[in-house]
Image (cartoon, rainbow, N blue to C red; front, side, top):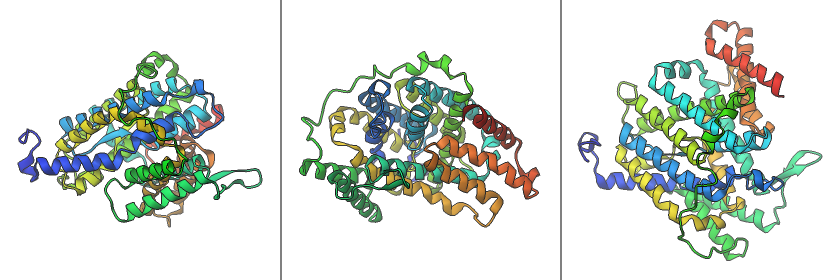
Length: 440
């Protein structure tokens, strides 16, 4: 085992790897709670229950998809990087695809599966570098920041800190309401934990908020903590059964968005975490193909199980900071996700007011990408800004990407930099223009 995971070469041991794997799990365990609530559109009141995903089944699918991703990454690619259904992509799945586009969640799962299959092909070929290089750096950063704003807005709205207003579109909610005050308390606690660099600060912030909610009678106390593993029956295999429904222009845009966000989010996370762990060699990522293959395989498996895109988590950096250096840490994280399957009863205490602080903090972390954009270059600042701001304002990640990718060739051509635009970007320009013509 030590030889396979190169403990001696990486100057690590079982203790460091176990602590690192546990730290990573605590840092990202919030997804077990947030993902079922997000995919079931729990924060949306006037939405037919028949069109919602089953929360218990999504909980099981989330844990299993994360375990598959962690095991594959740890054993195949040998990196201390954990995977789980991604924040941002689950919001796009729920709020853009299901709620706005009116696409059934079964068909959306098929779209996730197809994007994963395409990702596998790209991971096994040399096309991945070409595609990564074709998208301008500023747009990559803007997409991440825009998703962060969108996620934060979803949290603010779901907790009723921000409410609709006929005159101003949105307004501050009732800050005298007990549930809203619970969210404010949770946000303050989570911010303090994050500022103090407490490992798993987001996760512990949710636990403290839920506990306070139960103490003051705002949340019902669960009858038990440990229970049977929830059935996967409501979601398992739906991606396969509804595969023929993905052949449409609308689903093409959805699949491209799933693929685009996952592809670049994964690439950025891999490079960032590997650099932190000192695993980069000559500014290149060893076994990059295996790492991308692990990510894409987990996406396909997750879609079949019944969850949105599974991707590499930047929270893995917390585990690296705690000493993780090898794939064994990812295996430990995967085992902990399997163990979590027996704690599904606690889901009842996690309401939208409890998850809102986590969504807001995740949004803060993702918006950090903005400092990497050169705002002095107007020709790239405009499409980057439009990409970012359109996501929360249109309540659609896909629309934000489409607007940014349309404006980028326009501003660059006007600046006399047409030759700097990759042909793939011209192709995407046409695709997104058609998207607005035929779907909007």
